[in-house]
Every structure is written in C-alpha cells, then in structure tokens.
Image (cartoon, rainbow, N blue to C red; front, side, top):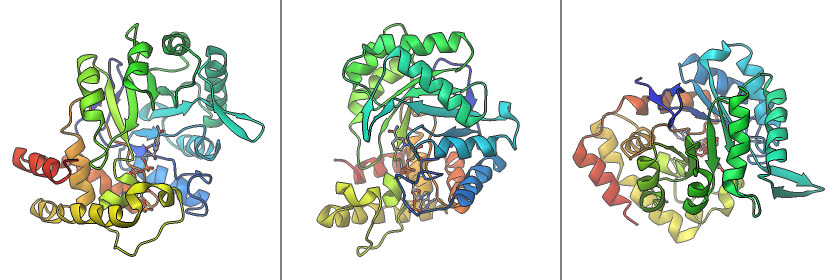
Length: 310
Ligand code: NAP
C-alpha cells in the first residue's frame, strides 16, 4: 500500500485504517461481538499492516479505548497511528458535549490512561458544544501537542463554519465527518475548504454501516443503531439496495467486491486521504484492505458518482 500524510502533520498512514466503534462498543452494537472477538479484529488490522486505529471515549463508553490499548501493547507503539476522540460528558445519566479547554485536557489524560500509552497520534474534538469558541478549544489541543501528549489535531461533526473558526490559526490537521455515496453534502461544503487548507477529510460510515457493502436483502431487519437510520427504512432502503446492485458489474470488472469498489471510490475524492471502515469480523478487515490497491478508471469513477447522484 502507498502511504499518505495526515493534513499538515508529519504522520504517515496507510489509506485504509480501522474504525473500532464495534470493538467494545457495547452501547452502539449491543451483544454484537464479544471483547475477545473485538480484540482479534484490531490484531488482524495490525497484523495486516493497517496502522491507523480510530477509537473514541464514547465507544463503550471507555471500553473501546481500553481494548484497543490492550492490543496495542502486543505491538510496537511507534508502528501504530492511534486516533481517539473526546467531548462527551456524563452529567448524571445525561450526556452533554464539552469543548472547554479544562475538559479537553482532562479527557486526553483519561484517554492516555485507558489506552496505556503516553501519546495519542490524532486527538479529535468528537462533537461541538454550544458555548466554547472553537479556536479556543483547538488552542487547548495545540498546548497538548506542544507538550507531546498528542501529535495532531482533529475535529469531528463540526459544521463548516465551526471548522473555519477551529482552524483560525491553521492548527487543524483532520476533520472527520459523515460522508458516503448516500450522503454527499460534504462534497460541496467541506471539500473545497479542506483541500485549500491541506486538511485531511476522513469520512465516517463509509459503508453506511454495511448498506454499501452490497450484502443485504430486501427483507433484512436491524436491531442496532441501523434501526434508527432512515436509509434502512422501507422504500428508501429498497431504493438504496437497487443503487448498490448497480455497482455489481463494476465490481466484477475489477474482480472485486462491491465494498472494495465503494471504498476505492472515496480515495478519488479531494482531501479524502484515509478511510476507517468499521469491521465486526477479521475477514472484513482483510477484505477492506484491498480497496487501497484498486485504481478505478476515470469512467468508472464517474459512473459510480452518477448512480448515487442525489
Ligand atoms: P461503516 O464503516 O460504514 O460500516 C462498517 C460495517 O459494515 C461493519 O461493522 C460491518 O457490519 C460491515 N462491513 C465492513 N466491511 C465489510 C465488508 N468488506 N463486506 C461486508 N460488510 C462489511 O460504519 P462504522 O463502522 O460505524 O464507521 C466507521 C468508523 O467511523 C467507526 O468504526 C468509527 O471509528 C468512526 N465513526 C465516527 C463517528 C464520529 O462521530 N466521528 C461516527 C460514526 C463512526 P456488519 O458485519 O454488521 O454488516
């Protein structure tokens, strides 16, 4: 696999990483995979030479970071590019967002402890809060960067305006936002800015939680977070399946699976340097790595785009 650099940082990653929200993510995918299976998903990624792991405090909560940390200890720390995120704060049973410098600094310390490491390669503000000026929030992360506790700065789920405020001093390396063939708003909103500012855009839900992998039948039902997603409901679900089916001949042309073609397509988008598809089984990790080796012809890039034109 060729490598890419994250934003303006000196962090080098392979274009396919691993999203670990199902690893210990008991609050997101209840009873979906046990913790040893989750750790094996992470081990498989690292054994395959995938070096970027994407976790967060709220996956579990805490458990995804803890399990990721346990697996990391079996490998050379410097071979791993570890990304995590914070902003969620429990107030009693309620969760609120907090981007205040004090909270973010404490969150980084807590993540370091759970991950059993002394630095985080990429730390994201997971969600914006209402009150904190975004350049002030990023300023706190810049201080942590200067102290060597984090190596690069990311924001996630920010609007374009919030990103611009966050990046006032040019400190933001990565923005993570929802983007996939069924949700393409970022193309007009974020990409012109991220490309101009040399910020890496990392899409989350690249496979729309499995829908874009081309494996679901019309009668499939869901009991996890997909049960709430409009793309999995009724006629919309059926229309989406029809679009995904149109990818089959393209995938066959490359002797690949639909999921690989979809992932390879994202890597043709401006400033989309890295993908972090999630996986619930080791085979999915091995399979998705293939996407980095596919060079889609220009006419197929266009064809895929046209199939999913909103
Ligand atoms: P995703 O990447 O769109 O979908 C992953 C799911 O698709 C897998 O769990 C698996 O589910 C299925 N799959 C994966 N590879 C496949 C393959 N080759 N063939 C068939 N099915 C395959 O969704 P995601 O995992 O939720 O999102 C990716 C990552 O983004 C997360 O792990 C997390 O790190 C990050 N994320 C961040 C935010 C944020 O707010 N910043 C939000 C969401 C996610 P099944 O086996 O169940 O079908």
